[in-house]
Amino acid sequence: MAAAKLEKQIVATAVIFVMTLFGVTASSIPLFGIGLPTCVTDVKPFTKPEVFFYSPTHYEVHYVARMWNFDPPEVTVPAGSTIDIYLSTADITHGFQLLGTNVNLMAVPGAVNYARVKLERPGDYHVLCHEYCGTGHQNMATVIRVTDPLAPRAVPVAPEQPDQRVGHLGYQVLQNKACLACHTIDGKPSTGPTLKGLFGDMVELADGSKVKADEAYIRESIQNPQAKLVKGFTPTMPQLPISETELAQVIEYLKIL
Ligand code: CUA
Image 1 (tube, protein in one colour):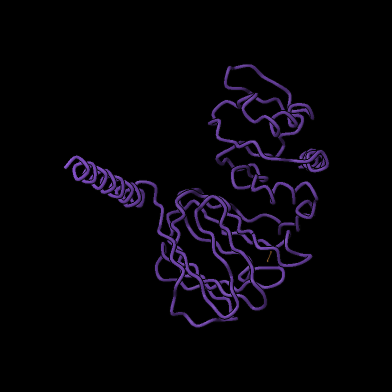
Image 2: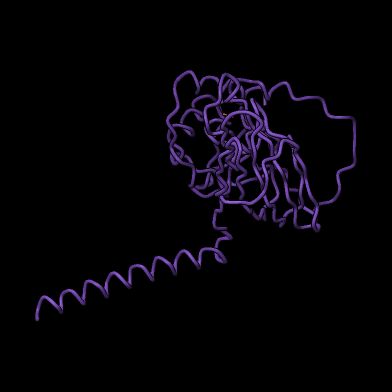
């Protein structure tokens, strides 16, 4: 009899566990805007990249991955847009990680993978290939630009010069370590402080004191992000493994940014 009672208790506990898990999962959809990843589609493999406009806040993008880029190379949508992402590959297997979101797909030959994402916050969302695909792998990236529809329109000035600094080794390090998911290089605010003009600047810390962003400061901020907290930002930066060479490359890059 005692055994039967214990069994009932175990079953009841298991049921509560499963229901809690299901409840947390289900409520995370409206609470955090997390979509459930889906992979199976009935879309035929394609080699033609396309952007479909359904409404000002709903787009569909057909991405073609190939060594070593993504097509279309750049997509711009207004904040609050939902994007249906379909991913195919023209050659071998590639990865597709949309930084700052939970979109993480594989581009598999002969198949089409799918994810839906809603991008609420304006900014640049970088896409990285996370499947080693040859010598150009670490440069395989694209960007989804999310514009702020309420921001005043920028008056077009001179045509922008191609940014030579993007090819910088320090930039590659920042990209590979996903630093750019939270730090911009163009002065725009994001989850973390912008890296533009940071080097040599005076930084105001959470405790009100000021510190010069010199080599020692940058070094410490990367190796021990919580040592000096910048005013107005949350202490969310993870401690990432970084080699001495990479650290030096990042510092060189920040000097010219
Ligand atoms: Cu494509 Cu790595």
